Length: 88
Image 1 (tube, rainbow, N blue to C red):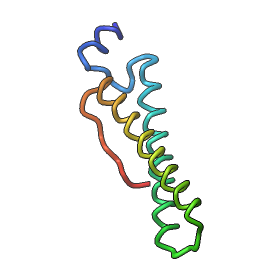
Image 2 (cartoon, one colour):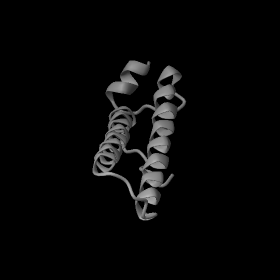
Image 3 (tube, helix red, strand yellow):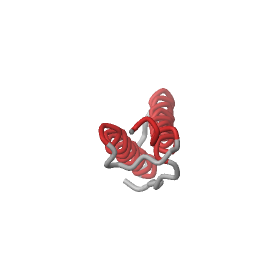
Image 4 (tube, rainbow, N blue to C red):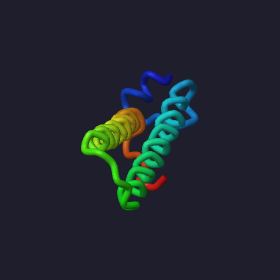
């Protein structure tokens, strides 16, 4: 049963409805990675922005990093060791 597989951390992506967590987590991680890549390109482009905009950009970057981390947390707790991707 899925409950036993959850408790022993032996879930697979193909395990019933729990496979949904696998797919949606990696989709969210990919979106975060894309956003973080875009932020890095924007910052290296030498764009002139106000201090308030810089603070807002740093805040959004922190939010993206947190969302990515929480999805990795879910994956590790449901599936055990999971593949980490940092590229968009």
